[in-house]
Length: 249
Image 1 (cartoon, rainbow, N blue to C red):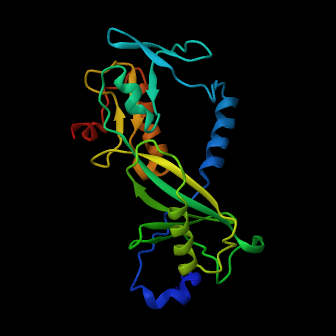
Image 2 (cartoon, helix red, strand yellow):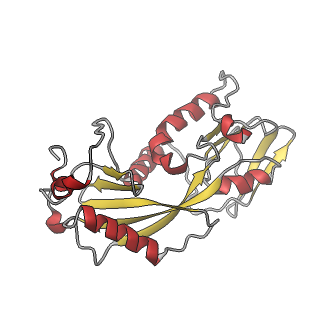
Image 3 (spheres, one colour):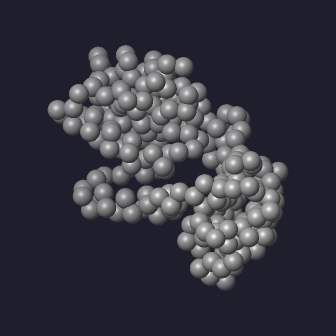
């Protein structure tokens, strides 16, 4: 409660907590937009909104990616398509054990644009019992949780959103206006063992690397995974298959 005063009224209902000052939350969209600007300045070309129609393989190499904008040629390719990686990899005869695990979130605007106060959480809080995370992102509060095995169904369940609203009202009743929350549903690319699929696959093209299957930790592991992939793409790199334990299930 000393660290998070917004929990004061709820103190009698929990027995303790683990505080990790090294952890934080960030706005994924803003991070990606900033990265895009930096990479464009370095000469990187983006084909945003362009669907991948297929891969052309010759011998042990991918020679081009087929898109409506024309074929894309490169020396090496990285497949980082989340739940879509399984389907595209299957077109090459490769098995990638990634399945969509659906989750939900709501986002609330903090009242009055204040920096906090006794009623608004200042640090991120996880309700271990309900498996719900409350993340402070600037002047917003994002509440996320749930897990559904429903395939590629991205429809937003009103019942699930109502459960997140109720959970937030119970713990942080003054956190924001609950009448106009922004609901969202997404598909986490999960693997049976919870391990990401990083690097080359046995029997796969030598110049095709995978970066997928991070589950709910995509943003958390993104930069570390990117460093491993970048290292593996260097000409002097040894064969890299750090996450292939996930493919043994």
